[in-house]
Image 1 (cartoon, helix red, strand yellow):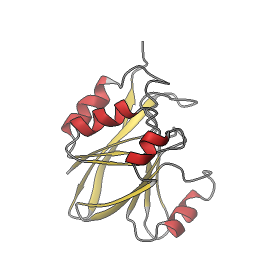
Image 2: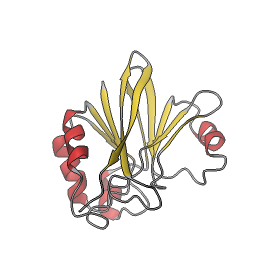
Image 3: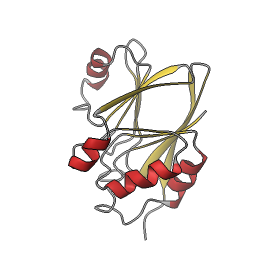
Image 4: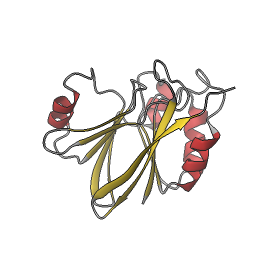
Amino acid sequence: MQLLLTSDTHVPARAKRLPDDLMKDLDAADVVIHAGDWIDEATLDLFESRSRRLVAVYGNNDGPGLRRRLPEVARVELGGLRFGVVHETGAATGRERRCAERFPDLDVLVFGHSHIPWDTTAPGGLRLLNPGSPTDRRRQPYCTYLTATVAEGTLSEVNLHRLPPRR
């Protein structure tokens, strides 16, 4: 099963449109995971229309319309792994411990908010993934998103995609 993980798309505040590479991988993915900060409902509509399956949450910058349509936390079983999705996890210091305590029933937690790509494993085995942002690199050298493969209870081929600068 092919996964696309993204967050913090911030359209149209940070970009007028989503990057072509992201959209190509969105079309190819079996499951798309979005960890919030959509900004507008049109972007959610686009993801819903083009995704085979979408697992998504709202973020701190998402208004009432998005909050009515999306949960704060999503949970789903994919390929034998228990995934969770949330926008905010707090400060980087102590993140693994806090998330392992908050989500003891998960194998993988996808989060956003910081725009900083993150891939660590907490004591006890919880994998934490932040895909960064495909539209707002903030202090990072690149805008980013992740793809991964999940099968038979294993997450593999977790790839960070660095996007070319927007023109």
